[in-house]
Image (cartoon, rainbow, N blue to C red; front, top):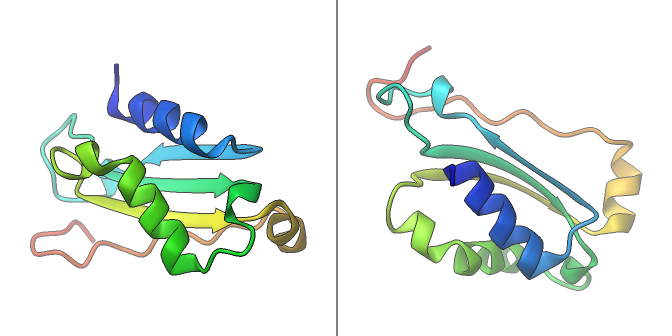
Length: 105
């Protein structure tokens, strides 16, 4: 199973999202071809109601602890409740550029 699919599967099981997008952004970084190390996650779930953004991220990190301790280097997380998502009008910010050493501009 591809890493993107593995991440999607775990997040679907843990958060029952109404919207889930997992994008492999590894190509934007200075990594070997075929690496699956940098991902952008958009997750809309009412499991986040009443949770601060920091705790939402901790929930995801806990769910993906095995992946984060092995091949996944970075996650750009965009976490929303259904009500928050509706207020955004489907607008998602772009991931920031990689600032790591040797990044591709």
